[in-house]
Length: 188
Image (cartoon, rainbow, N blue to C red; front, top):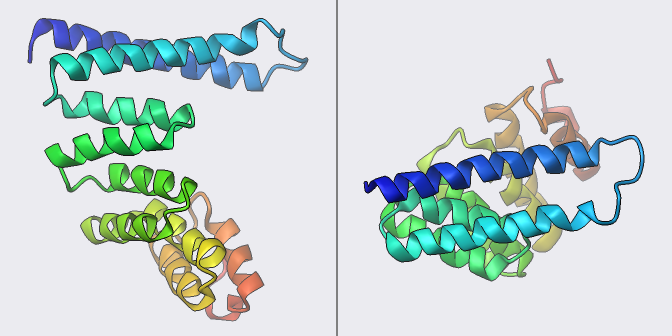
């Protein structure tokens, strides 16, 4: 990898971390944020996007840059662009359950539920313990496709993979609402 490419990736990662810190601190401040600072994260996000776009234009085989560009589009609510960036990353490595899942979320946001379902299934086939793909697949079945039986089946598998991790209590409540809580073990 070229030194210039490494430099741009390092700068992009540092900027991304700083944006994350600013955004998270902004959300936890005791009082309302000043109106002038509310546009700062958006400006930084746009700068990140421009930096990553230049990076992938100069080095289209840089999978990490495509993934980061997809994440930046994801975070800035640009689902079509996120899907395209994730496609490029998946062309370079089609077996990334996290990228497939993030792309699936973007498909769902556009209302392309069949594509979202395909991505979540493929992500879980690649990594059967990938609980986030199961969580999202259950959401598509429950709320988008109105297939309660498949939602129940997927979320039951989710609890087998992630019985006490983040989201497990939420899934138990969902399953209670679907009327199947009696078949599940209690949270540890």
